[in-house]
Structure formats: C-alpha cells, structure tokens
Image 1 (tube, one colour):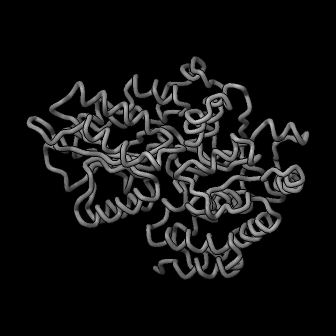
Image 2: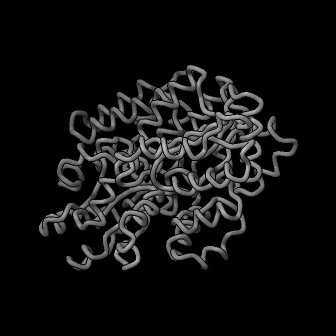
Length: 435
C-alpha cells in the first residue's frame, strides 16, 4: 500500500516533472553537494517539491537534486538501486519491514551518527509517528509529510440522491450496494490494477474482526498466523462484496497512480472510495470545487458485528519518511543532514502541508488547524490519528518485501476469484519465516 501518494495526470507528466525539477535543482556543477532525493508523485509532492526548490535557492552549496516517481515505479526502482549500491542520498520510505531490511543490510545510517544531539530533530514529531522510523531503539528515518490514516471517502451528492447516510456498520455498507447499483452508480471506486488499494480492505476487516493481535502474530512470523479465523472471515467478506458488484466494473484495469480511481468519486461515477488521507490533497488539486462546494464526505471504516477490534483503530501510514543512505559521500550526507535539521518541517513546510490538506505529524499544531482552509477535515484526521488505540502500518510495508509481494499477488487472486479465502490463508502461511 502505501501506501504512497498520488495525483491525477501526473503519471503522464511524470517524466517532464522530473526533468523540470532536476534542472531547477541541479547540483552537479561547481559548489554543489551532489546530494539527491527520490520521492513520490501526487499527494504531498508539491510540499516536498517546493521545500527542495526553496532550500536549493537559499543553500546552493548544500543543494539536493530531487526526482519524483509514480508509486509502483518507485518501489521497483528503489529496491534495485539500494541493492546495487546506487540509492539516492535521501531515501523515501514507509518504515516497517522495508526499513528494517535496509538497516540489517547496512544501507542506511542512524540519525545519531549525523548529528551530535538527535533530539534536535526527533523531538518535533509525535512519538507514535516517529516510532515507525525506529529500528532496535535507534532512529533511522524522519517523517517527511502528513499523517496518512485510511478513510472512507464518499460523494454527498450521490448519497443525497438515494436518501442514504454513510455506513457505520458492514451490514449497512452491504445494504447500500444494490441501492447505488439501481441508480447506475458504482458503490466503490478502486484502482485494482495497482493491487495495493485492495490491501486496505483486508487490513481493516481483519482488525475490525479480530483486533490488532491478529496481525501482530503475522508480523512475529508465528506458524499458521495467516489462518486465523479473522483472516479467513475477512477474505469471505471481501468475496461477498466483490460478488455483489461492490466495485466499479473493470476495476482491475484502473491504475491508482494516475488518479483515475479518485476521479470516479468526484465525477459522480462512484459513491465511495476507501483510500489513505493522501487522496485529499490530490482531489483538492484536481477538483477543488468538489471540496469547496461541500460534496466530499469522509468517515471511518465501518464496524463488524461481534468484532473484537476497537472501532477507533486505524490502518494506513503514520507518514512517509526520509532515511539517509549509508553509501552517500560525506559531502552528500552533510547536505542531507543540514536539510533535515533546517528545512524539514520548518514553519513554511508545515504551512504548505496544511494549505494542501495534509496534517503534519508534529507537536503543538492543534490551534493552527483551525486557521486553515480545511479546519474540519484536518482536525478530523489529526484527532483520528492522535486518539487511535492502534495505528497499524500498511501491511505491504510492515512485512518483509518478499512476503509483501506474495501478499499483494495472492490478494489480487482473492479479489478476482482465482483463489478462495481458505487458499489465500494457506498460501500466505507458506510465506511465514519459520524460526
């Protein structure tokens, strides 16, 4: 998942965007640091982009050349580059199992090796978010954008058309499917071609049914953990939703990186959209009137009858993170360190995040939320993340890359009907790393 960030139309313009910023932020000339950074298109891209542009203008000797990639393309590129020793100076990531792999392989350096007192960098962040960048008690990665819980977005116009309220229970959600279908409206938008959007459904259902302990056992590589009744039941519920026609026709050909899934919501083609809060800045950029006219609604994932999970639990990404490559030169590390110290989450950085509809994971911004253009939404996200009993990292980032790949492949087959819930559980159990 990544759970990453996206914006409509940027996929087609991605190459041009990379060239534009590379030219603007070039550091290969005399006096340049040679440092570089890779990040994602969409979502909080504009904040990160403008931060580097401003930084490079004010710090030409410590400039950082930034390039932006679509989510899926980036994941492939960074994995190959890190393995080959060609990682950028600042590595964009999600924390979790992937970060641990980088640490175990000696590919990233702890913050304590870059500064004399790391608390100057770490104390600005909310502990629950900062913790995702910690491995074995050491901080290796710092948050670089807004908190990203997965929300249930909905189109208020379409709900008004059928006289319905957003679902608070799974049964209510299922009852809405035929009502929207009768009006020729797809109940849910989803970018199935990208696979990771399907994961959000499994994550929330497993948590609502069995609580966070189920995935804790999976992360701990307990034999048979994937065959927990909560996982099997979640798979059955996903199949029930798919079979009922819950998702827009042809969803397997829709790519999330292009923003085509979000467009279905704000062009009145789909009534609901389960996606991380990174979708809000993208929708705001692509269809600002949809938000300003009050047509976008948002709520939490429904409860499941007799479920053990706390309804206040959330899944998603606490944030995205910057880690510093161990293969970078001392000059490149110096530039990265100075940027992390003075440029990352500066007042202007935080202001830009808020203006774009993202909630920075920093302390003491409660009052600033009320002065923004999106006070209700930003406060909703901030409170949701701050008060959640459990904020579960996206599974494709919490697990090892090898296991995450298997998860996305098997989940795609579950959605398509090529694999039953029982077969899904068995296939995932075979990926458990026996101790």
